[in-house]
Image (cartoon, rainbow, N blue to C red; front, top):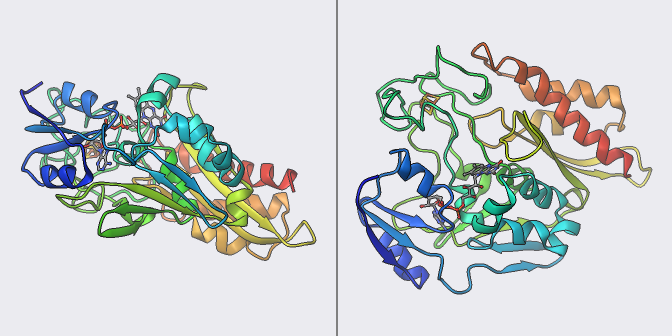
Length: 327
Ligand SMILES: Cc1cc2nc3c(=O)[nH]c(=O)nc-3n(C[C@H](O)[C@H](O)[C@H](O)COP(=O)(O)OP(=O)(O)OC[C@H]3O[C@@H](n4cnc5c(N)ncnc54)[C@H](O)[C@@H]3O)c2cc1C
Ligand code: SF4
């Protein structure tokens, strides 16, 4: 781990100014940054500790929206009674992320900024070729072990999976991220690799995430997050789905539906083809399963991750049908 300077920012303004310095990185809960520094991926010249900034850990919920401060801990948000009742998928996604200890340390802003778990990315000594770490160096995963890699949104430069859970639910419900002057859809905040795999987030020097904002909706109120993984806790998704459902008064026809997938794409993946097909249709198992197959349009596998193409539609269908049972 290389030497760095430590700077404590007590205001958002100070954090913004300091984060514009070359080589500066923000520290919130530290659960990702310290790992990345230890394995030699992050080499900050200055670490700016933002964990003491007042007023950034609030959770404000009205019928119209939830506004959650960037320094709110994952565990606090997951356990918030209003989040549980108005945005169950958000609470469930957080509960199924990481471990209890990590959730008590980790923040919402840091969660959005986490980097991929591609093992080649995190091992610079043994795998120098990684376009995300060293642009133009190649990709060690292509032709390597790909069981955890993405099948959607991949490019010839990078096939790394977006690893987080929370953002899948945020994308399903059209949440926004507040960056000071700018507000962006969370969906647009995450970038597919294309030819610039090193850019994962649309965040500029001098910008700090201050909050996320989630619009309230009937679909958000009846929502769930299902995560399938190799073991039941402390594991990233092999495939996951955040789903929200609103039915017509007949209790059977789909008025609104939201579907976003995790564990299978290079960024949180909204499955609009599935939503468009199901809106106005009856909530019928055969129709739902057939529609969910559309989520995999354009999927490209690299051998060992082929199973995700079959798995993800089943996870999405299971989530929709589970919500239907509670109708
Ligand atoms: C073993 C392990 C298992 C995990 N499992 C999961 C999982 O299953 N699902 C899941 O979703 N996550 C998982 N995580 C990731 C975990 O959720 C993140 O480490 C955590 O959310 C990061 O938050 P933090 O506050 O600790 O961020 P930090 O480590 O402090 O920061 C992370 C990054 O975000 C930047 N940053 C922090 N705050 C801001 C801000 N306000 N504005 C701009 N940039 C900012 C930092 O500069 C840094 O680059 C796991 C992590 C570990 C170590
Ligand atoms: S998949 Fe992406 S992160 Fe992994 S080695 Fe290839 S370029 Fe690097």
